[in-house]
Image (cartoon, rainbow, N blue to C red; front, side):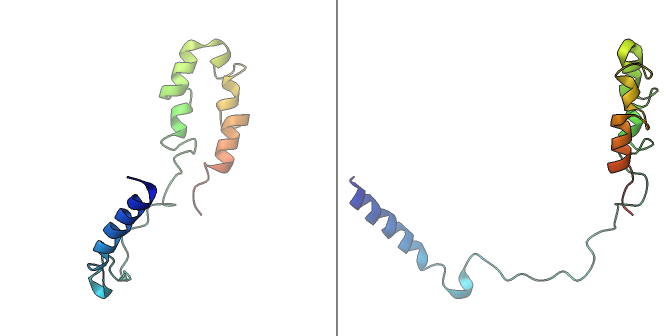
Length: 106
């Protein structure tokens, strides 16, 4: 097939579908606004997950699964080590997370 005959074939196929999409018989339906609430609000109703007491933040504490592993490795990863000291609530990383993500919704 050359370029001209393939274009004609494409056009012929596209036109054959046009008869089935007139007016209201098309595939699109009118949208209907939903007036009742879809669900209860769950954000801002407790501690943020990234807060030091939250589900994610608590994992980084010295007795949490991630922080506990770092404690077991020790050395620089210990809570008072060169790396570990930055992961507490007052450290550079932990403090930044507390400040930006740990507050939750107000």
